Amino acid sequence: NYSNYPIGIAENLKLIYTDSAKVKAILTSPLNKDFTNQSFPYSEFPNGVKITFYDNNNQETTVISDYAIAYNKTNIVDLVGNVVINTYDGSVLKTSQIYWDPEQEWLFTEKKFTFKNIDYDISATRLDANRSFTIFNSGELEGQVLIEDKEKQINEN
Image (cartoon, rainbow, N blue to C red; front, side, top):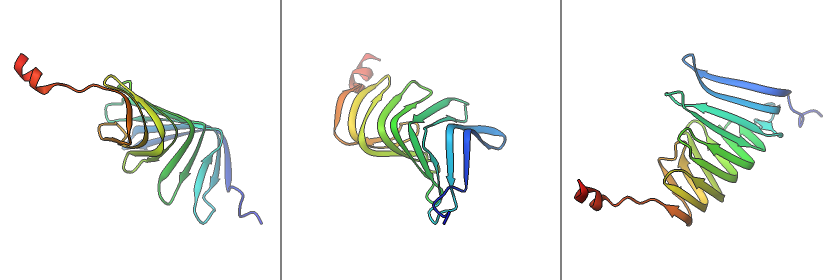
């Protein structure tokens, strides 16, 4: 019975995703196992993955992890092990596991994470955020957050 075996295996994979002739993402991985022959189809990247996303201004956000699995029916990507997200503006998120919904451009995890950028240097457990981190919900925070004093800004102007 070969039903538990992948339908295909690719080594040194490089996938380029385009939309209207514009590159939207590049995925590279040393190994990909294609299990789309299963009742709940998925693609596995057992030796890690690097994904570079490009926004409409061609600015890069990179995601790396030691392991990844992409579920075809739900379009959810599970990134596991030394997950690091570097955004074009210098923001860095690190965690042991995060889920990515590419259709909604949404990230979520129940694991501990750290997030650093010009305004934040925090760690917390639980994250629910959009890809650009402009919408950001988390559990209990530890660290430093820049809070602007709007009243002081108004009085100084």
